[in-house]
Image 1: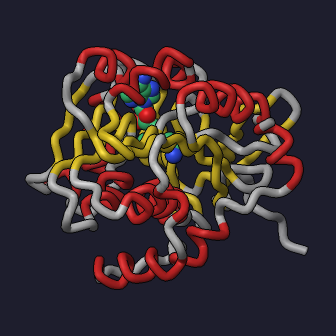
Image 2: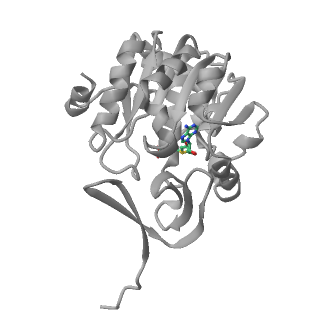
Image 3: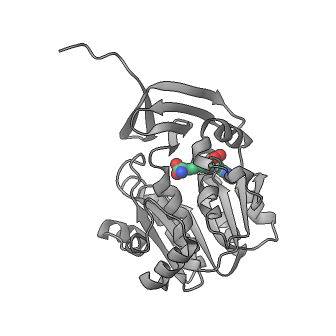
Length: 286
Ligand code: SAM
């Protein structure tokens, strides 16, 4: 047996009792921004991986699952979304997917960290894929919580593409933030949130769902499995006073065909099935 060369590993310590290690083939960038430690390295399976404070944010290999499910589920369910707000989303992948909908007139993206945006344009250009140059994108560098407290704009879909509830992302998981975000929704508008992996971060989902139940007539979550978010499917919170969730597979199919673009994970069937929750997740909601 030949000796294996020693590899460097990026070890994610998001949970006290669990570690995820990803092999660093090449460290591409490692620096402190004004808000967090930003690293990008190359991994043989996932391509380029961006971590913030050691926690995986996005990988070239599996980002399509997260971005397609966070953007297309609310936009296709809504059926006539013109104005989309993204909170966070610094890598540009969420804006890319939202902008694929030609009927979307404007995407406002509020990212706290200009460093993440600048960096992503340079080192993760495959992910934003031109989204930052799209004239329909308005980029605001600000705290998303402060933005929803102050803006008078309204949005048909709000997507919270945040970090986990530590550091600058913590404020985006508060009842106050959810209440203010709701105030920015147009009639029948939809709020979706990144809510972690329920098997590992159950309280996070329970907390968000408790807040959503007091705020929205329709409060639930849906699921998607993203390989680098370890521990099972990830939950995306869904809150709306409208009835968009009732859109049938046939209606979604009609909208999807009319949109005329291809996806790698999203489909009207997957959209529908994503709201079927296993018992352990349903329990966290109640
Ligand atoms: N998909 C990732 C995940 O779940 O691991 C998260 C994506 S990453 C693009 C999240 C972005 O949210 C980061 O760029 C971070 O700077 C930004 N962010 C964190 N707190 C924020 C806040 N309070 N307001 C606006 N953006 C924030």
